[in-house]
Image 1 (tube, rainbow, N blue to C red):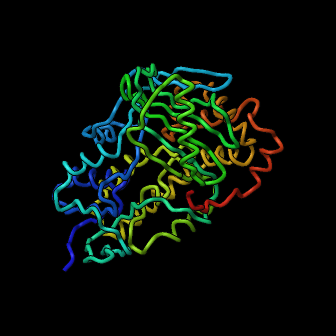
Image 2: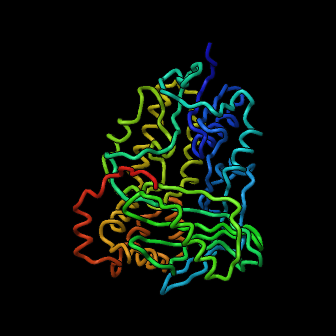
Image 3: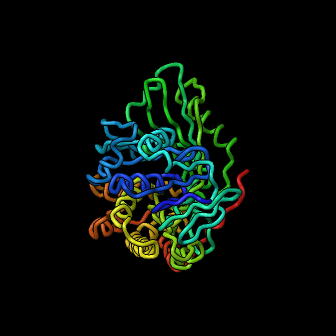
Length: 394
């Protein structure tokens, strides 16, 4: 006999975890299951966002999590431009994400260590175990590469360091692009977690999804030495995220979706296509799904499908910018795109990260002398871009 629930959310990452939590908070009587292949929710990640990215409801949804926040603004660093911005910043570690979900969700909702073999409209088939039956099934598993989408990749290694002496970083550094640019847009991302603790991430907007962990670790070590830090590594994470610049979104979703199953999260295309910031989109989508949680499974699937198509249409501008970044900018000079962007008014920058750019914002971003050669820009706009097909990690 399998277990029976009203709603089964498959995939306990950010999108799945927030969706399950939002549904439970809005409808405590709904029997919900959060099905995760790993032994903990959230995997091994850190999610960050600016304070203005979230509306009141999303802020309330996140309020119980133990997140780190900074009230001294943030800064960016480029070869010809350095700027401090006023927006405060927040960051959530997946270990704290897991702990809060376990506290808030009913015990029988927590189904870790269960890998879904297949999904159907009324059940989740578990490999080597009994089925999980449900009125509605929501697929929030990880995003997958696809020939139906085009773009590039954001590749990174992040390390939580403990320095022997105070590191001296007072506020988050969103991008330190004063580092070497080896055939990709490279920057260092810094989060001061204490006087002697700091999260350092080496990030690349690269054409290839290959992640060379040893090389990135050496570069972080070199960066730390250049700053005069003697440090030990307490924890680390890696990631290879798609930066979507175009494609056939309907075909992409059709290749993954099972009839009657709601396809959500990053797998369903609910991401910021250029920055890969997922918190604002994940929280808003979780709240919307919670508001529609009473619908039958097929209707809930249709509801999420409409939201996905609308999100794709609404984020077209960011895919256009991504296309210019990957297909028009010379790889070693991609940093110039962001260097120019960070000279724009701060409210515009805030709306950009939240994927809420106004028409005037878009005109302002595109006006003036372009940071890429005109001929390459025209070629990029006419091209289809490289398919987002993954390669193996080294």
